[in-house]
Image (cartoon, rainbow, N blue to C red; front, side):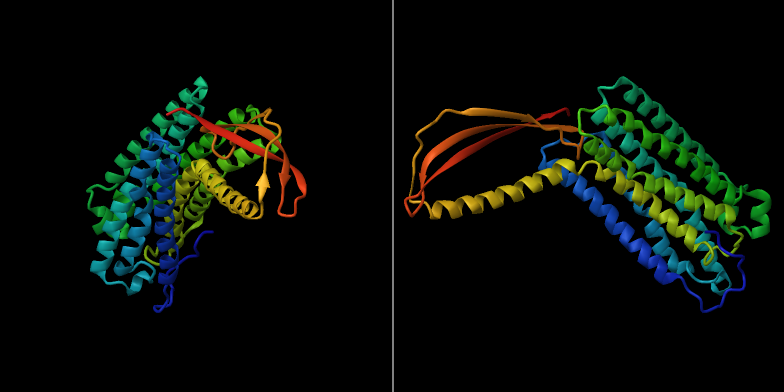
Length: 359
């Protein structure tokens, strides 16, 4: 994935369409994913908790790389560096310095949101709570350490955007080392967060297919790990020194990574929302069907009102944070006459549903 050695790019070359084509959808998807998360909570009468607030606070930091990349087009991003005016290059380097200070926050917030979600869903398991706290502290420590290194990576500090390549090589921490310090730990944390719920989910009283489905939902976060690995490989193998043209691929992966993490973390909360929509759709269909039957019935009477009970308890694997239980009673009905006088046996199904929810 690494870029080839640069500097003989055609002066008319441009990667601006790629930047726009990646950054705009990332911003839209991140906002949509967060909005659906909030809507899912409201629709199911579940109060917002730490996992939701961390996701909401992390949204601006997740889309910041995409916004910066889009703004940086005006400073030469996507065009060969040899064609960019010197003052634009200084502004470009300053914006890059600022972006790198905030980039780790975009990665950290979705990790902390996932850990808070685990505590909310599986908090009854003490080891899940403790492990979530430990990993959370490690993530925060990693962010703080990175921020210090990034802020003071050059001496003096303004060499980060004003210095020449020779000055930065002598007095600054290299870009490659910075990206390694970012990508290495984040891959480690992502893998830990991915494997945490597997043991708990597999121990639930669900069918094997349901367990695999639940694990698959949690494993969607593997996409973030893959992107982090691609980004790290691109950093290690790149020999391109063109910051405005040769770094476009790395910039795009950097824009996609935090947004993908935020989306994957939010997907795990859509279960009750999807279930409610599905039930609403079924209710609409049943209502239409019932209205159709009533319009063709002239008479119906019950000769038996004895209720036979049927119970079922259903664990909703689409969102493990809520347990849905339903109880159905069936009342047989005989002597139901249609418009032609023919008698049919029938039944009335009454379903009661409640939720056991831990706020």
